[in-house]
Amino acid sequence: MCGRYALTISPEELKEVLGILDLEDFPARFNIAPTQPILVVVSGEGQERGSNLPDRRALLVRWGFTPGWVKDPKAFPLLINARSETAIGKASFRAAMRHRRVLIPASGFYEWHRPSKQSGEKSQAYWIKPRHGGVVAFAGLMETWSSADGSEVDTGAILTTSANAAISPIHDRMPVVIKPEDFARWLDCKTQEPREVADLMRPVEEDFFEAIPVSDKVNKVANMGEDLQTPVPLEKPLPPADKKKPDDGQLSFF
Image (tube, rainbow, N blue to C red; front, top):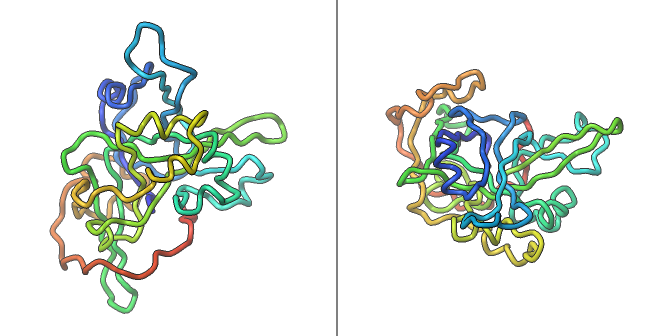
């Protein structure tokens, strides 16, 4: 799952890494939460003449995917994540998987290790970031929902996969990471059908991320400072990897 993440890289760096032709300035965000606007990158119509950069654009969408066929969003679950294993065939995500795949840039994400209630232990938050820094691109889906009065809302979700061995002691799910060499193929919804990019929706290498224990300040949306990523000492070491079958549920309580 991925219920909170951060994007603190500068617009200039983001343009260079993701090949975005035009990007307005934006502030660093240390606690991006569901229902808030998130930055997504989409493929354009073609490469700009005289430029070596691909034609990619940045958009703001609401984090919380709403399929086009939904009549009342208030009565529909808030889909912030889509399971990569089932998104191709699931009614909610099928059309977006075929026509509206996006990249969601992030500096890292937050995850919680939640011990069993019987243990009496507190949940522990982790800031999980690329080991070598920089920005990472999550696989995402986008959908534009239209109301009866004609107004439109762009919405999005982050695709998740089974956690790798490094992350599984914290949680059994993690975001799908798209590597730079695969950006074009993932975003190409004209020639690359969902089954042809299915190989990209797998756990990233075990040494890609590092997990840093942080305070529970990140639990509150109102907390938005850099101190959210300050390391804290662990009271108890992480348990070994959980080999149980991952839960099939969508995160929908935010």
